[in-house]
Image (tube, rainbow, N blue to C red; front, side):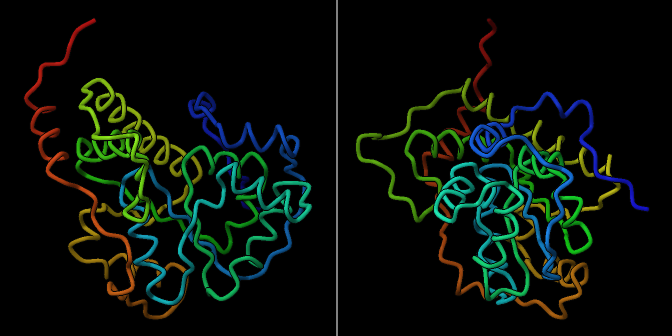
Length: 263
């Protein structure tokens, strides 16, 4: 018998805003509830904000095997669909997802670490495991990622498809905010590794920079893990563009040159 997935004790202290909002609306987790299995494989794209996950999601979708992995486990998304379709529980929502994503052979979903923990506590991830693979995306340049997060938070432009708002104006350099984002990124990536290690899961682990250089090794690993045959990306179908401007480069030079202020 396979041991159930568990949440390491240290990860119990992580904030779980999505789980809290969903539980407030739909009630506490019901780990004994049995999911109807569809036989379709799941690919969880494990991410931290601004690691390149939206680009990777579109690259995977360009193969024709996957849907464009969305943030299906955001509380806002779960509750919107639950309300519109009369779904009483998180389990019912997860059972409905394959019907909402009809054409793809593989159901791809983005997942933050707190969302993986939510699915584990609900007993959902255990039931998806026989048909699941995990792709962990990290960005090697943590400073650039943190700067991107700070700029996106100020402008509202989280992808090149977002227009942001005019009243935001030019982003303002904030060293402490960048340093705080670096800490969050490092902790979240470490939490993913802790969760996978505690449960004997070996994710497909790739850096954003390596994928930019050559996406095919990642495609080959996913195809092998999910028994899909050959996967070939079509970059022409990727709509997102790089958002970095001269501001990102100026901020990075300033951040690495600045002395941190001691409180």
